[in-house]
Image (cartoon, rainbow, N blue to C red; front, side, top):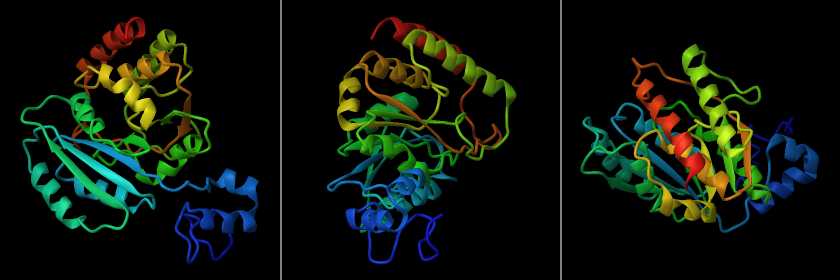
Length: 282
């Protein structure tokens, strides 16, 4: 456990979290092995994390998720892509931009679609604006916790990974109990995807996919899927390029359809087609 004068995130007075001085202070107190197990590591300067958030009718949760992302003590650009929402999401984005204009570690970048094109299309728009060393996909619906970015980042910072998937089915992180058939469908799609990619992923459909800038640029020109087919497409393409892929266990607070969950059985059929399509051809 961290010493009594060390907050839960490992920060100490006078040290910026994940800075060289911060890590050295913890390493000298806890030891290198303990720091590694606790997820304490140094992020070399300069470093910028690009967080790409596709937005479609998320006015109730959008401001809260941006607050959670901004609270992560890493320099970030937060790229909000509104996919022609029919609610007040655009107004919320404008309010967020005004609120965070002078934020210490988070810059807001926005883009707006003139027609609804789907999550995959929104992500392509956001990816084209990425300037950071590493990019991560973040849904706006509060199902995934941005506080876990450092867990995802660690294999990349340590030089072990080019791509990291946050798995809802690994480890002992808390998970809301929801739909059995969704769980079974996810496991089936992941297994089928693994058969085509020769990977051993546990959660191909996860939102949390983190890529280095170079890895992202290697696949960005080839991305085609506009909706949820993005997940098997990007998985097949990072596998084909033999990028180093890691999985990290994450928490998950799934929402119900009454709370706005959008994916349905038609997206499952599309995912099947994309697994075969991109498993065979780029």
